[in-house]
Length: 262
Image 1 (tube, rainbow, N blue to C red):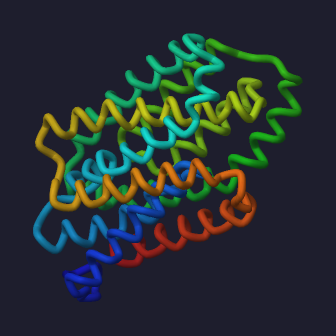
Image 2: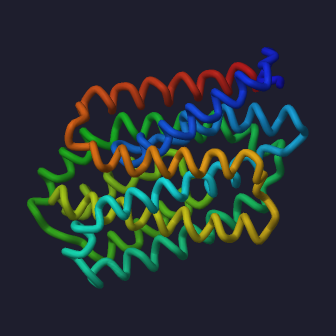
């Protein structure tokens, strides 16, 4: 298969896709940024067989959805604690995700390939900035909560998630800091719930639109689901600082690669 200027054997391509999918599920459950690992081999594989970039992005979204669901199962105790109070955020996530999916389906393949490196760069930059920004905003907010602003912000973030997904978790964390949500358990509950919905509803839309390449999607979904559950289950034992640095580095390298190959 052809990726950029390099010909990649079929077996190597499958191994790369499998590795990227499993660890994408792990990253999404711990720190976010899973698409940095899963999207490049998927773009490579679909381009080599004449499948467009929009279908590749839609396939990536559908394939990573099981990882979000298994992460939500792993965080079920935290979610039970908040119950129906998260319903407005869930609705905002669903509406925003569907708008993002609608926009992606109306973006041409060539245009999406032009936007891809910029979207990846934006996601990587937001990942780096989200943690210091969140701490700074937490200090300014003095524990106050802005529920209306949080719902409106979640709608906007979910539009981005439905369109591209990569870096959506970083944006959610920054939004929570702005709106005065600082409890780590509540933050985890909001992140996993809104991700499952803002990715899940677009996934259904992409499937109904016939924009999913199933031979790759099924393999990715199984591995991402396994990675998502294991990542959430063992998240307390993982060095979060080292993981964040690794994700940031992967994001910038991925963005640079797509800038180079055009």
